[in-house]
Image 1 (cartoon, helix red, strand yellow):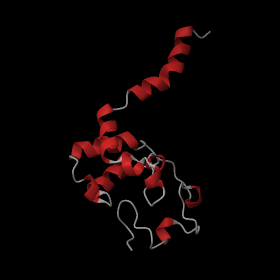
Image 2: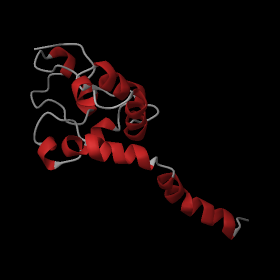
Image 3: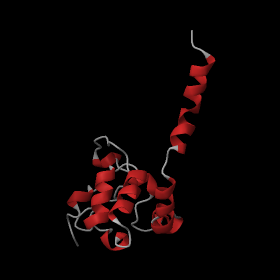
Image 4: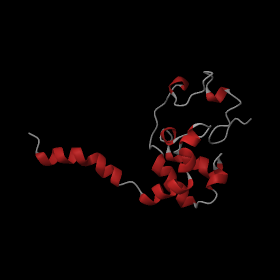
Length: 127
């Protein structure tokens, strides 16, 4: 028989995990990233929103900040700050997805890697 304390722990777990988020990383994201990646303005352009970034691993996000397409924007951040932001918004693991399952997919139906218009996020095809 379950005790009330074990039920309370299960109910409180999401709030405990949310409280474990790094407030410094959240502040960095708000200051340096949110104006484009967490806004209606960015959503209307080619800027990936936070929901899309959360499908990426922290390592992929950090590579993009360190030497990819976001290198110039992240140049004001220290390597540790870039790591904190990548860890905040990235997901520890990703599931393999078919191009048709991806968020913000190309309306033409062409997978991103087969299109020269997509400069990619971490290097790759260029215009």
